[in-house]
Length: 347
Image (cartoon, rainbow, N blue to C red):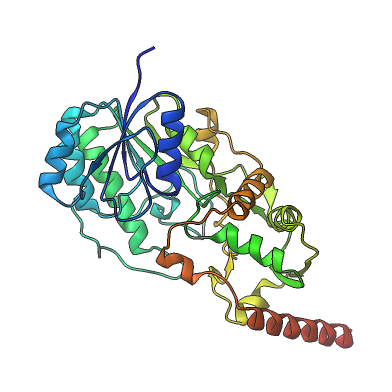
């Protein structure tokens, strides 16, 4: 069987690195294109140093081709993706873009499928195209939608694959959503658990996304989310279990009350969001094509093993947004206790 020639745009941290490691382990001929300013090269890959905004670097990259598959993990600005796709089109059989569910007009308010309307963004848009709404569209979502359009314009429907993950967790995660909950459980005490424990959630493991990206020669668009069989209660209980914690979960089930305390959804209490569409992204199309999501217990256990084994994610500005301070957490729990007593007294 001939070796698959894979070019990964990125490839030094989290998803890109996991894809590179899996591709090398299965015997592919792997090239990564990266600036080399953060992370490190995966053993066994050929690295081309360069910047995707530099035309000379792109020309030099094209000279290193041909490739059976390009996997782009680092596209955010449409006009840069358009230029890159045009340069690679003669030397690449397929182009797979890692996009996001944030491209949907209805995210995170409405349940979504691949047929749901997508934000309008031209393929040559710059980094500031669009606007940020709350909870509506974001410049990030607009940009990714424009990157999708750029790839499809150049490679066409028959040579392009678009993956739209929701939340990706697992070892090497640089935002640190799962890490925050693991370390919070390790600290113990009363833990502010947001919302209803039975609310279904859809995070996916980085290794499962990588495996699907390297899987059969698929074209088209695929939402990549877990099927929703697990819950927020499952996630927090698993985090408590794998850390060996005796923390006590205090579920603040009145989400309107919790939001009224000024808690920043999604970040201050990671993965908590009240909008009904946040965890209602249909991924049946991907599962029919071979995608499989492992249990959140495995993701949490392996992430904890990585952290306690000396693992550390790259420094990233988004990590600083996460988490509630111990003092603020306990203050809100005190207010919740008082609210519950008032409610009981009123009865």
